[in-house]
Length: 404
Image (cartoon, rainbow, N blue to C red; front, side):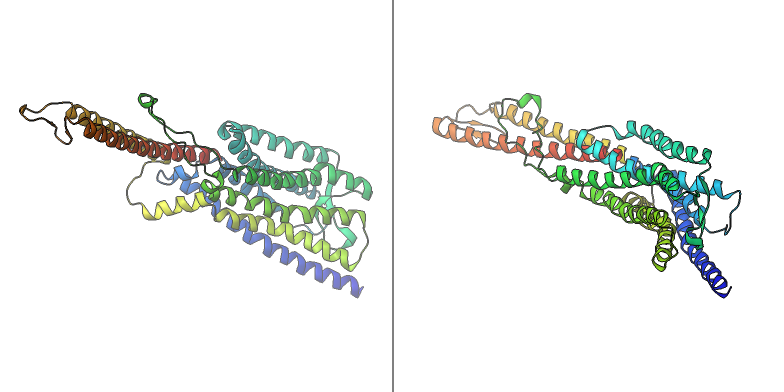
């Protein structure tokens, strides 16, 4: 009897610990979502959050709120409402894992295959709802949710069945296999993306159609990972965290089902399993709080006192400015060429005076002058090409980042 009372006391302290781990994650995630909502509502910072992966992150955090809420140990014994809690926890856990899987998949499709991320966003949501809803509804209809207490120790609302092998099949088929597969794909997708972006990509020279007869050197190859390293490396932290938060709990769950023996090792593993589930919301919230898009949005609110154009408007204005400079340079060269061909009123000299250039009647000096003009003209068009190429790279960067 004393041993039983001692175990109940220890389990009570464990429940308090799980609540202390779940409540901070729940509070921080709620606070972040409110911050996301305000920055998305404000016109100054709205454009910084216009990214597919950021919206998927918001959906995942909403699911993590549900996971944290149902992880609070409010039930310490079998209860009719335990099946509903387990159903909600399984749906939210699968949907959260699906969102992080879709973030990795979207980055892969946009960068490597050029797929429109905005167009694929609705398919990500539909697939995630189906993947999280069908297995959970099937398990609920089969009566596989309830109060689960391995080895009569710390209990929680989860899968339960008198036959351990039947319970194992339900856990693997409706939860573990999907979570492990999606976490594994996140890592594989990130490795493929990094290997692809380490290859230098040749940027085709951008030249006006009127100077197609001029031979220009191709632009210097650059590795895209250097251009998008902030976005790629930041998104790459999610696969790492997914592995830490998904692989150990799934392995521990399967071990406890296969070995339902009351040992010190199993009690420790069960405690570790519940701690990881309780910390899941807090760790993802800490990672989301350092998202570059959100930080730039907050920085824009702190430093901007007047209304600024959105990111798309800034890109359009930059493009318009570059085109204005380009047309201005072309007009200046045309005026100079016209001036060179305009004779001065003084016709008594052996040379023809121009406004900026003096063209003599000496053939050798004329050849030298023409050579210098060709060199200057070549340098001018190279400068225009570099400026136009930089503009194209900037526009491409903004377009891809909005779809990532």
